[in-house]
Length: 537
Image (cartoon, rainbow, N blue to C red; front, side, top):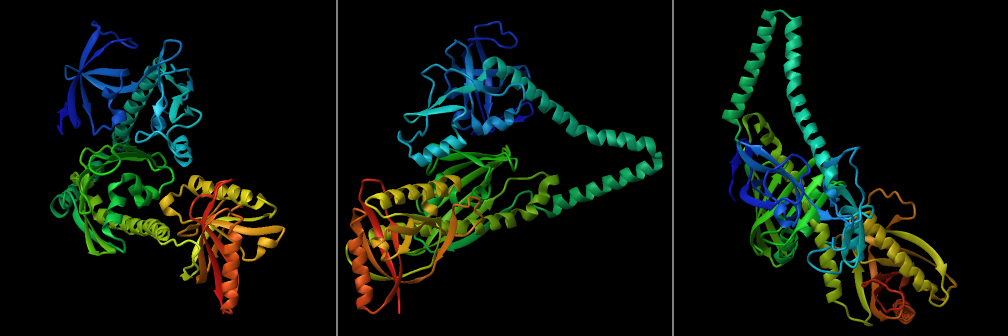
């Protein structure tokens, strides 16, 4: 990387660009082509204007050179004008009452892939993309494509950028003025001698602070943190090298409900990266994986708040045993100015606290994932087994419905989708954060005309739920008689009867039966489930 500096601007890479001028919207350049210099700071694909055929460029002169200041990607509209679609994560920068997004008819060729890695996103992925990247008021989703239906015309973008630039200049001016004016008023009302004394005291205090920071506090911080987790290294490493997995359990990202994350190819391993912005907490940054040695080491670079000096984190993975892994974080924080070095006093504590919370989340993610993998691998259909089932916490709904013909199964499919969508979309839980959906009901109610049941998804902890249709339910640990069943939902009755007969033969009393769906139930198709009858003396 070319750590370039131009005038007073610190940036990462420099290159020269030549563009044909299609249309001038402000000012005049005498030639049909323009040559200028572009500086970028750790740019991602969509922030690099070279990746677009057409761009609205803002060129300014610095130190006798033409420099690219800003840009918007633009596309042709059906009426022959130029316009830019809406990028949701940047909208908080373009807060303007005058230049709000407007409905625009772009040419038919203008569309964007929902996913860059494959063509057919799931319903869950489409719902998340609609929420965080392609909202329905700005885009229409068709055939795996996001088609823009709103944006801003180039002429409005020029006016908008002028307005933003003016605000930035005013903010910079105002941020520097209060000290000056307050000192001026101060000197008017107080005598010179007293003012000089106060000024000397302030200078001495600042000098003492600066000296103490310079001599006694390091300009950067280096520290190491070690943790162990009860899972094999190949399962743990993947949660760190895949950034989509990483952001699902790392407390820095999971602790905020307002954070918006963009992922960039290759998504996993060396070269993968993300950018994030959190409007509520007023933070943003970029993270890269710069080096990877599979199942052994990773190196992250984290750029925060547009700081050109990154925090570097080396993570080492050491297998303690076949089922246990030691994780070692070696952290190198960026150099800080003398006045900011006080931040180094709490950097390590804050990082350690984040790791503690993240490890708890990671354990929950891996326990669900490993439990699912182990359950699927251990399936023996139509064989009766005895197991000790641990207690679990479910979030779901209570239902009463008819038991006529296919009415019960249709009702279960409907409520399965209702619970699953609430947990994954409304609550934002990922697949590896939840267990298999389970239905709890009376063991012998299959003969009744009306059936009552509770259907829920296992979660790791209880929290506040605003929708009164949903409630938590704890299933206590117990001994269970188990059978795995695959076939029509009606056909499960034979397996349930076998479990009840086994309990009676063993002179055991029995309680509710659990129906754990190992695959999503679909109307008109076979079910794949685990039947668990709780028994006791």
